Amino acid sequence: MEVVVRGHKGATIVDLHGRLDSSARWNFKAIMNQCCLNEQDHLVINLQSLTYIDSAGLGFLVLAYVQFTGLQRRMSWVKPRGYVKTLLDSLDIPSMVPIYGTEEEAFESAVA
Image 1 (cartoon, rainbow, N blue to C red):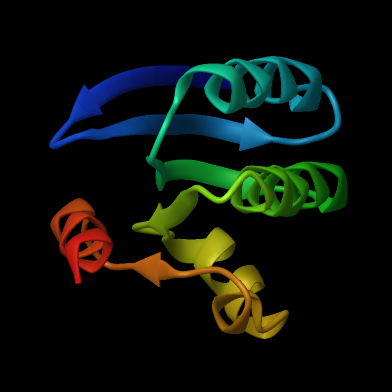
Image 2 (image 1 turned 180 degrees about the vertical axis):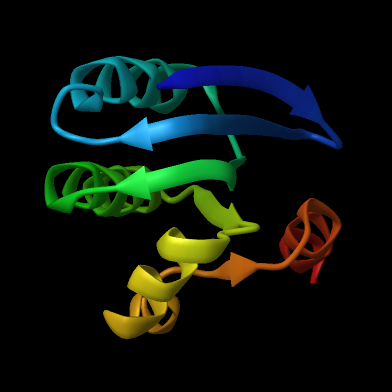
């Protein structure tokens, strides 16, 4: 899995590319730990290029959400596609985690 971290509109965006599975979870966890230490307000996880997620990867993604929001900060997920979107929808993840179609929608929700 490749991860790109970038800033935009007062938020940190983490782009996930490839597969978030048991072998990639430690890399993802290290990045999320850094974001928990450094990001002060809004963290956006961009799932557009995430092609696969297994139970370990999903567990770490949900745990990152719980930990980050537990610090009184905002986390949004954007652009899940294909298999990843189907999985998230089937597990009713959007009822727990704010998921948006675009980064702009996520940024606007932070202002509202």
